[in-house]
Image (tube, rainbow, N blue to C red; front, side):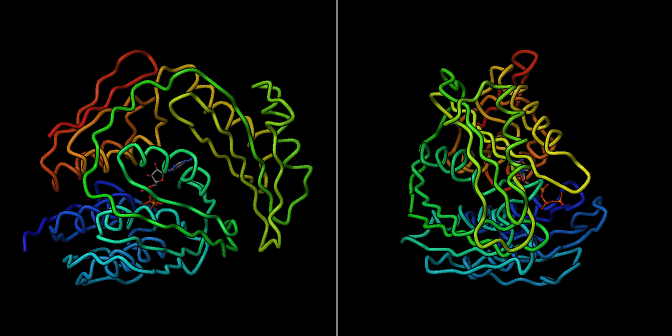
Length: 339
Ligand SMILES: Nc1ncnc2c1ncn2[C@@H]1O[C@H](COP(=O)(O)OP(=O)(O)OP(=O)(O)O)[C@@H](O)[C@H]1O
């Protein structure tokens, strides 16, 4: 079996997850050394370990070193199988990142799969379930990839316990896509999601968004998680253009006012609105993989993030593509994938 030797110190969890996805799709195995070496707690954390085990299960892989805290891993992919799967991070670790790891293998399978994920569905530093549903999955559809998502219950750090269901349909031939123009601005709306916290927090967050973007009453939603599993608050702002909806998320935390949480989300959205980009910084790194599997494509984004750069370097090791980026104007970069 062809094997790649990868240096895990060149990135974080994303490098591992992308390597797992690409290994399953290409049949190329890998060894990964110095996993997350530059992070404060290096090695495999629970969320990463769940992703390794999930990838091994979906792809019939042989794995050496899949243990909590492990700093090296050997992964030899086998045959991808569709089916009914259940993966749990066993904590509030992000289950959306686990889903993203196995999605490419599952859409490459020959039949529909159903996946039940348990853990955190709304975590800082990860795409939340709303981001997946409103921004990621609709763009996958452009490649010809059909994924249905159902959020049964949100899970926040530290209690976790969220449940997300995904149905993934086979997609053999991926269409090459260009996400360059976002089209006209149609609407901006926000949701304050609360669990075991006063509605007042959400109302204050939505008031900030209202003041910044002139949101009408029908564009402000307050949702209490019932039954609550533990305290949590996510503020979700959707900027809907004709060709793409961008989802911005903020998280309430002790010691940070509702106004500050909302102002950060609003500032992020404003940076995007001031740019001419179609795709936000986060979705930018996440779309590279389907673009490369489709054999090419392009997107415009607000910045070529570290995640985008390290993901591009990894993808080029597994697939015969070249990924480049160039600045178009002050707030817009164009990323191109060529085979
Ligand atoms: N606010 C956000 N909205 C959407 N996606 C996000 C957001 N924040 C982070 N992401 C995405 O989540 C992923 C996080 O990858 P990252 O490697 O940082 O994760 P990790 O496993 O927590 O790693 P580590 O702790 O090693 O940094 C990236 O694909 C990034 O684009």
